[in-house]
Image (cartoon, rainbow, N blue to C red; front, top):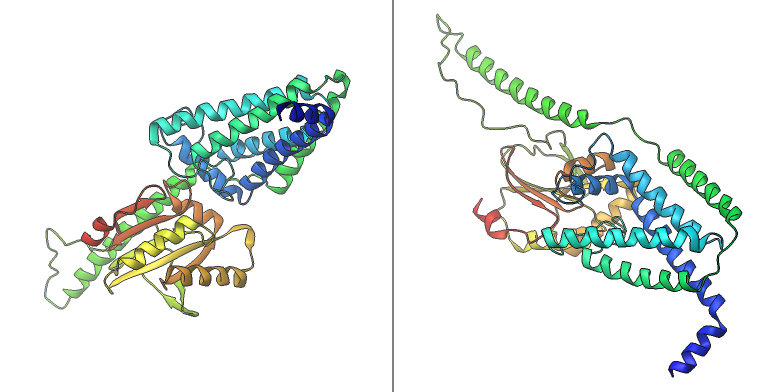
Amino acid sequence: MIKSLLSFEKKHRLNILKLARFMVAFLFVFSAIAKLLPIQIFEHQLLSIARKPGFLYEFTNDCHVFIWSRAIIIFELFIGLSLLIPYYIKRFTVPIAISTLIGFIIFLSYQIWLYGNNGNCGCMGGLVPMSPLQAIVKNIITIIVLTYVFYFTLSKPIEYAIYHFLILGGVVLAIFLLFPIKKTCCCDEITTKVSVEIENLNHRIDSLSAMIDSDKDSSRVIVPVKAPLPKITISEFHNFKDFEFNNKKTKINIDEGKTIVCVMNPDCDHCLDITKQLKQMNLAKDIKITFLFCNPNDQDIEHQKQQIKAFMDKSGLIAAFKIISIDEFTKHLSLSPYPPRVTLLFNGKIRYDYFAEGELDKNKIKSL
């Protein structure tokens, strides 16, 4: 049996080598394209990695993540497309591909040691969720295939390296033309927080002014030494007021009373599972449940509403929802590297926040 396999391999070696190269090339190219759909999700995943202690702790921020995300995607596309051409395979393409995969294995192993085998590693973006351990297994298999290619591939003259420079130039040009960097920075996050605090302050001033006006009928204005401050706090979700429920427009004040805000993707299986858990909890009727869904790449709204309807039907939980831009979506994922995020607010104050990984704390939600 083994002799037959070796004989078959020797007879068809050139075709096997070509097939192996094309398979690994497809893997790299697909990985890069998956990170582009949409690129904002991948950028948010990089920020989440940079905010957690580890090899890449603080390696990027809101100001530089746009460069890093595109650089990683360009690198993967470059390696993938370079594997398609039969030049400089042994001298450059395969060694750098193997080195990259080994680097990812080391990084993922360290992440597992720190945080366990949880969540989506981001290797295939949000398109194909993979746990860190699954990604390690995939990388080991790919390294074995590339080692076979390296061992049996003959070296080509170095002058053919010009093709790789052309591929790199073309990939860089295409990525930055199709996905230009937006002029946003970490200062925007600070500005948003300051804006919310100013609105909170103005809200309190208005409340005090109303209290003073109510005493104007008396001969003198009585201002209490310790004026009671309003109970309602302005949350990060305060701008979202117009929702849709049962095909009708409705207005909801998220910051008033008890509200659960779910930041989710209708194509996400984990989001569906969390929503089913919320449904099974039979929460009190005075708790408002709202969903924020993203609209990646300006998809057709009506088509997306059909996806959301299917999502609601599968979960059994019919609630008010709003479709927001991908930039707003990633912003409100907050510390979560990917959806879902589930936030319980009471008069605008966050009482419980669930970020994508682990189990939903049902007992805590019920107690609050």
